[in-house]
Length: 121
Image 1 (cartoon, one colour):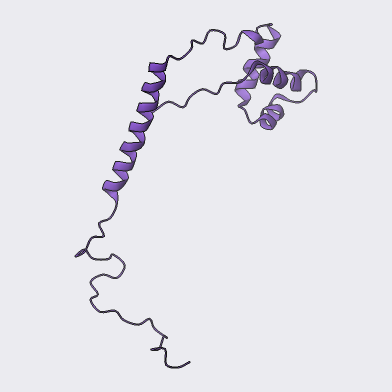
Image 2 (cartoon, one colour; image 1 turned 90 degrees about the vertical axis):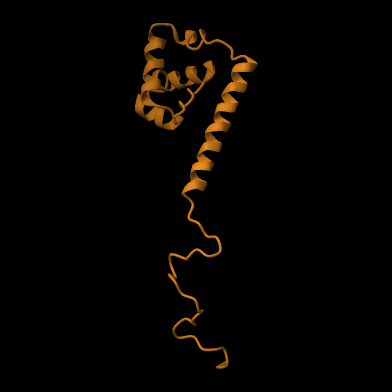
């Protein structure tokens, strides 16, 4: 199973989120709901802001090389292909000669009940 990638927020977004709580007086849970982020994430930003280290978030991230990006893309493509393959394996067989699970072993087509041959118009 692949990991869900971490969300990357801009420093401006983090500063505005913290300002909603400190400046505007919103509760952290309400601000997080409005911004569609986790309350825990906002709590971490508030704690860092109080310590004066909000700007340091994300500064230790390394850039992804072209090779790492290509490997990541290929892994994603492989996972999708495997999923499609597995779905096709589970798909019911509907080839000629197989029996429909709804109709069973009917060989003749029978009119639906209450229908006539169309001559009653």
